[in-house]
Length: 273
Image (cartoon, rainbow, N blue to C red; front, side):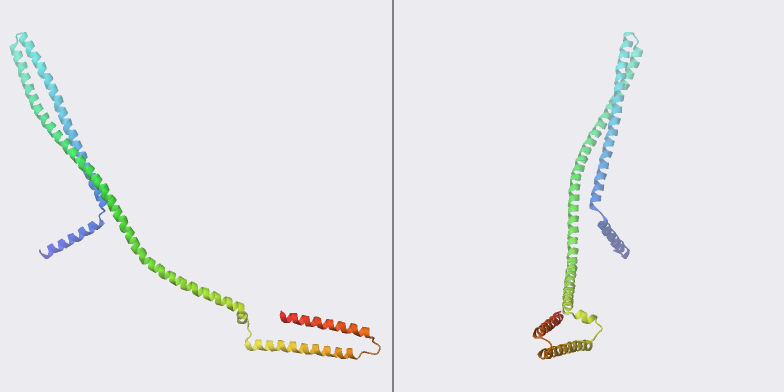
């Protein structure tokens, strides 16, 4: 095999391979079925044409038979009238018509044989078409089932690969969710501890310590003042004036005690707050 022949062979092989992949078997089956039906219709038209020709010959044969009867009657009439010459001519025409009738009968017989043969072929072709139609529908159903099965298998294969991606995506989503939950818990804890207030404030640790000292010093100073006032009151109360009676002193001490208790209660409420 030469190079050109081998190249041509390879090209034809590749073309056939492409055509086979592009070919739809169901369409091929439907096309073949339609072709067979067209052939059946052609056979039926052929039978109809042949039958028409046979009927024409039969009609012509009947006319000739009528002429034979007519010529036979003419010959009888001529003999009765003593005209043998006319009787002879009528019989000659009768003979010619009978020869034509015999020729027509042979042609009609041949057409009948062809018609019977075509009818048999038509019946056989029709049976083959019915069998092919059954096989065609069966093959189409099998092809569609195989195609659906192949599609499902391909989809399952692709789905398996996608499931792996989905699994990895779920893992990443779980990790991100856990990080977000941990961050939210940490923020809640900082918020409860008051760390956000420290963060949002412009004061540093030294400022806050100084403020605490100032607050404590102020409270201590106020407490000393209060103690001093209370001490002076007790001194005055222990040395009553000569013109103050004991009942008045008792009333004054009671009022002082009430004021002290009220201030102590107010201080305690402030500390508790």
